[in-house]
Length: 169
Length: 169
DNA sequence: ATATTTTACGTGACAAGTCACATAATCTTT
DNA sequence: AAAGATTATGTGACTTGTCACGTAAAATAT
Image (cartoon, rainbow over all chains, first blue to last red):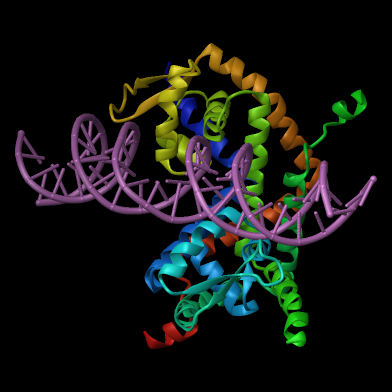
């Protein structure tokens, strides 16, 4: 009994240490923390949600875009952007129009006001990126991105086939 | 006009390439893709949600734990675990009891059935981890984890203070 | 010993993200 | 050109995750 009580916290610590090297968990925690930081900065700078900010940024950098184009750039689901647009139109950040070349597409364009809001928010958000680039050297970013590339390829693969499963084929 | 039409796709491509090196976005996309993969594997193996699986895993590895301990191990919010428990009790995976040493704490323990479910699901999930460790060498994992450590420290810092802001102090 | 502060847990309200499906438009085949 | 397949968008239903707050218990300070 006494022994059990003494060993238990050790198991917790051991488990904690072990999970520190779990890439799935670490990556998830890091990116969620990053999301929280972005949300806080956006809140301090104004009223934008994360998706709204990403839309403004893309439009400011690349001109009018369709929903699908933004989804591709942001590596996210089109539904997320699709849902953000009506609110952004209502707030006067963007306008939508049916594309002339393809009437399925909806062209989203920045208004002058939307551009102003982008500029203001951009102050905080580019400071963030600048601070990050003081944290990681170019080479380190290269390494990081390459590891992320491979990780992403891994998790997007249909199923990580096991050696045994392969043998059974 | 013709010019505008020709340059536009280039801007999209340029923006895409540029965003490929955005650590915030890449990390987020990678970890969300990882979550989707885990969800699919859990679905194919049974009925567990991600949180339920993590709870079973922790309990199987480290014995009875409190909500807070599991939250720490998983680097997640206690609310997530707190909400998962009642369902797991109902399904017979775990039992809860008020801790004898601290009556605020609720000790969560695996039932025999919970252990069975863990074992079954574990087949798929450890195959996943095994496949990942064939993708990254030990050294690469070390590098990856170290970069994640630093990234996490960055996003968890109060606010990335800019050099100008520092000067103004 | 009592008052204050901290900690553990649960919960409502919300944000972010995914999936599957519906609809309309475009593209391909034949 | 008509039929069939593909693509762009919108939307309902759902999961994951965060935050803020309330309550009760424990720890600390006076």
